[in-house]
Length: 215
Image 1 (cartoon, rainbow, N blue to C red):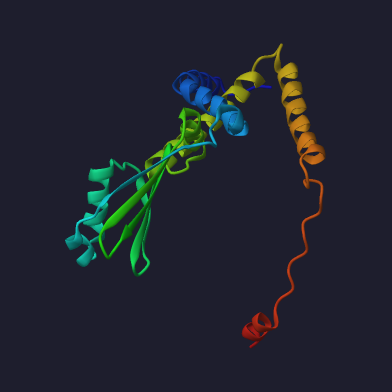
Image 2 (spheres, helix red, strand yellow):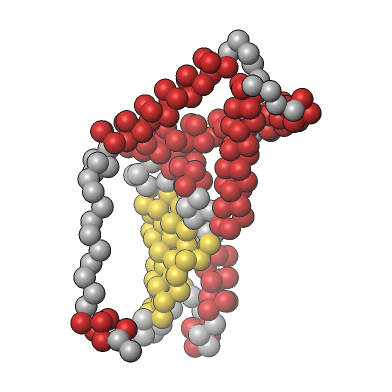
């Protein structure tokens, strides 16, 4: 198998620098892939729960000033997560904040400004698991995950090309690749529950949908 030497050289250079650049990424996603799969082993599902109480200024409630209410909560209760909910339920507010390691649930009574903050703090394993999933981590971290995925794919592709140009190891490399592919598909088909079941038939159209689509 002959490939353009310049192309092979570029693949080799790219592969070397990508693997070094992505070494920490590969380690991170390798380790967190294991911790995500065994969260209960690492105590990642059991948070430490605390409750704090305080007051929200009456003028902020009277003005229904959501921005300043949130700023007041962050200042007085040291909340650092992104806001995920701000619900006005008539007689009280319910506000939520989340980051990869903590969850805050806030309830503010409009009548007297009584504020209750419930905090769930998770351990380090839970934090890295949420970063692995991109959960509660913000838009910037999702871009990091996308770039890391692209980096890993390019490293794999250039590594495959380099295996193809090794005359003495090409057959062993292709055999290992085929074995890994077939083994993964076999495990999925035979051992993953429901993987060998046929897809469910499409749901029949309702009378309303039929009437709507009729000319």
